[in-house]
Image (cartoon, rainbow, N blue to C red; front, side, top):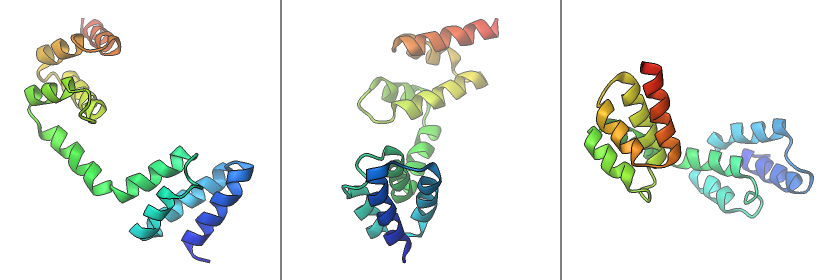
Length: 137
């Protein structure tokens, strides 16, 4: 039985009985052995539609290169460009940009403009800046 056949068999079984953590881990561990075609078929399968963790694992394997490129691009952006992209809430990169800006703030880089951007953002970002300012006092 191939890895693909085993995973399909487990997906069908778990669809009716629920996931066993050990079986889920085993199936996720077998995903890198599959071809792109098999991974794509699994991600579109009706058997995986209710299993977010499993689908995310497939997605991460299929698009690992592109995910790494996006993170690298964000790390290399100037802070002003980061803030502009952070303001565009539909960019799809807001969470990654937020993490990068927080790490730059903690490193002491461009704290003033990062704090200004966070204060103009949502309440959670504003609270984060306030907590950082309290820790630095």
